[in-house]
Image (cartoon, rainbow, N blue to C red; front, side, top):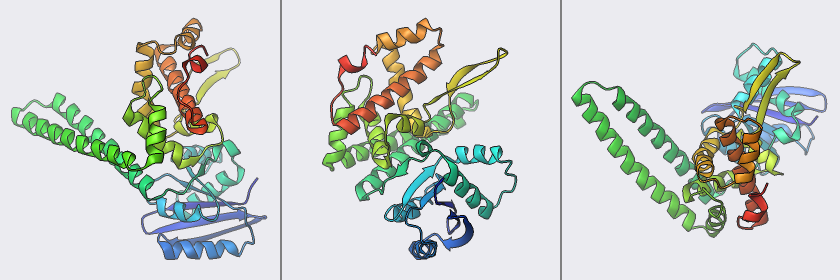
Length: 321
């Protein structure tokens, strides 16, 4: 177990809970630089230099405090679903900011190291890339919603409005994607990693950029940590001889990263980029969606290896496996 700090963050304030050297304390701070400095001074009173700080990935309210604390401690940003499930396992029924901070601190105190990927401090250009990528995802979600409304529309005037919205959103998405490309080209580190990732079959430039963003965002010790972060670790539901549930992916991971790998995995399956790997899965009777999930995981593992080694994709290394 480790000395842990749990933060429950809102727009203007955040609750902090500490578990350190057998002591448990709570406090509230403002979500600004003044509050961050007061939190640091408060933590100094515990005489611990090995705090691990955990918080949930909720909106973007956590980012400033996370970046500040990265300068002093290990910081992990946890999927809210993980904290929710942990709370259920502890029969946690009370829902207040103070209690949520205590629950996050308990999770941080007891979690396995592999479940606490360390966040890196994000620099200016990386932060801008992250924000513009998020905007692109939001616009695409809005366009999908408009397309669904268009399908359901019965009135011609209503249809015209939806079509106009779709056209406008498509134009905005093109502008945003062009800006994403400019951000990457302006920084050599980004461009180098993206070009290496593009050598992976089925991985296009935008997918490579999204992978680069997430690979640079965390201090992942190995490929398993990265795939777990993406939510690409399979889970089984079996018990005795009567319960034989199908394997599926967990819901703990990053939805946007997982979504970015779905279409490349579909393309890899359709074009048979990993024949031996897919054939083994088919021979075991695995259904198509599970095979796609396995390819998504394989692509994430390959991306991690390319990022860590600085090598390009090597067909002889991955295709037979």
